[in-house]
Length: 67
Image (cartoon, rainbow, N blue to C red; front, side, top):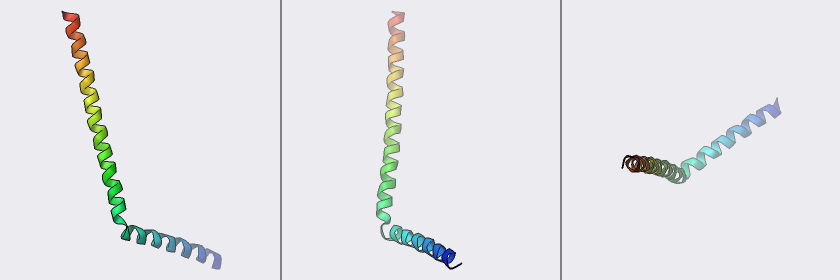
């Protein structure tokens, strides 16, 4: 039972250390989250431009066929 309690205590202390690190270094995680949001926005913008390029190409092909 002593071993089980020491494992539980170790896990609890590890979780407490992680929370303490996050509490003191929260700006790192905010920076990472902001970067990820920018990355998602950038992907979205590029996807819209790609869709617009495909649409323009399709319109050009239709106009070339008609004339």
